[in-house]
Amino acid sequence: MDPPDPLSRIRWLFHFTDTRNLPLIREMGGLWSTARLRENGVNNFHPGGNEHSLDADRMFGMDQYVHLCFKSNHPMEHLAREDGRIQKTQWLYIDDAPSVLKIDGVLYCPGVSNKSGMEPCTVQEAVDKIDYTALYEYLDWNVSENYQRRLSAEKCEILVPDHLPLKYFERYFPNG
Image 1: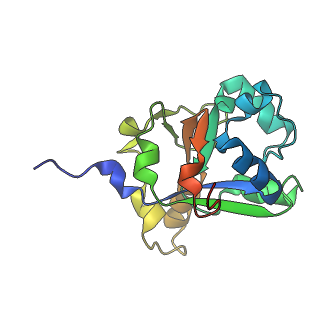
Image 2 (image 1 turned 135 degrees about the vertical axis):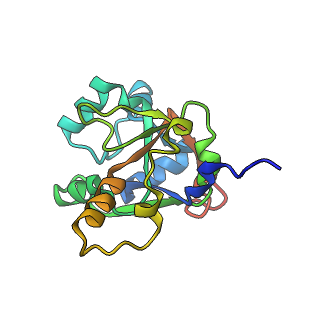
């Protein structure tokens, strides 16, 4: 009998967006990278990133990916909301994380992907790098080391090349 797939330990993934983007996500059949949106002349989307962040995405090639996170409290969402780039957040919950992780070209990044020095790797290479305990188990946040582990884990990203189809978000777009 084969051992269980270590990536099955990733229980869920999330994507945050402004609620103003929901009609466009439905119309376009899912989430698209900002590079593809620009390439297709789509200008009516509301990105979470500021100009500096979007420029850094382009510089590091991260604009070629749809960005997902492990928890519904990614620090970039908080900044986007505080800065007014996101008026109202919609967290898109993906409960079939293992199938997303099997998409060709999916990467793991051990922090915010457009930060200088970040080195994305394949999800297979990330199996031993992901802090599953900090993500999915109780840790006493009064212990400074535990709190820092959780904050670090919340910044990690899953990067899906180009497009994530609507089928992963059926609960938000029934009959879509």
